[in-house]
Image 1: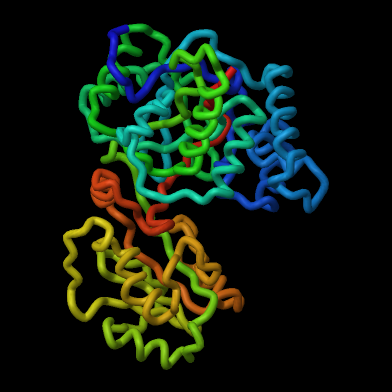
Image 2: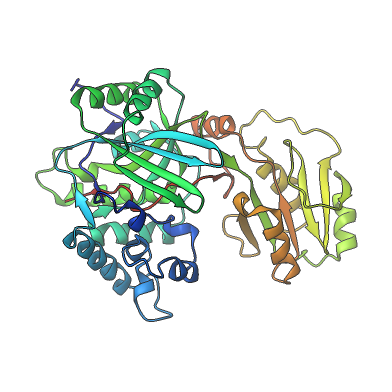
Length: 417
């Protein structure tokens, strides 16, 4: 294998389902299902990876999901899966080609150990802030199981040579197939050939940067674990598995970003008619008989008092700053802050978020139930805008992007011991 200075990525010896057992194991990401949903999903599925990623489901009802017992149970379940031969460890380092196919579209990427040092040097670039409680949860999970189980979704700029290599790998039979996980087919190929490993490593490591699309908390948690282990390992030499985090990177022209919509629990003491009047100072409001899913930037849907509206700024908003020109920031600046009194969407308890995969009807249902007062649908953030924000070292507003489909948990993991 060619020598590479300060690599972005490395191959690793993965932990994955035994042959023919991937469909038994693969599960949705731990953070997109509730406890009740997880319980439903594991019915008659004793080897679902949710027993590791959401181990509270195996403890008495109402167990605090952040209690020590939960992390201990996650470790027990993972070791049990290995002992029973449901999960196996590869003996040699490899890359793993990962393909997802959904609704007639497929995206093909590669799983690897992403360099902690590259992350710290901003060659693996982020665009979101993280919450300490969520970071703490993932740190405790990693330390308990000694495995990084949740992949970070990365994006790289499309590269024809890399794509050709991955296509060549995918021409052969997949080593693991999950034909239908929430409507998505997941496939995994193990790349153990030395020449192919070198080609993949050379193409990825020659890139200026990789971009975190989804999984900022997972990356930050792995970085904290690495820092602690570097401090305590007197023989640390940089080759240890903890120097990387589990990631899967896809080309930027294959990933799909859906809208990420907003729900507000009250109108900040306004009556609906008064709130509409306030909006009309800056927006053209048009009633709609159908749910509104915007078809272009600088256009919003609103559900209020049992009715849908289309909101369009009366004057186009032109901003050179990559954050300020985002639709999510435009909504904050023109509606959430001045009219609804929400000056920090990250911490304000009056706001909630609905991923675009659930559709505008899910947003309306929660308002009709009385749980919320008003909701807004947005046009999806463009990948180019995400990269521009990350390249500028800036931070997007919270919940600016919803990537679809999601990577599965359990299909490939990165052992630390």
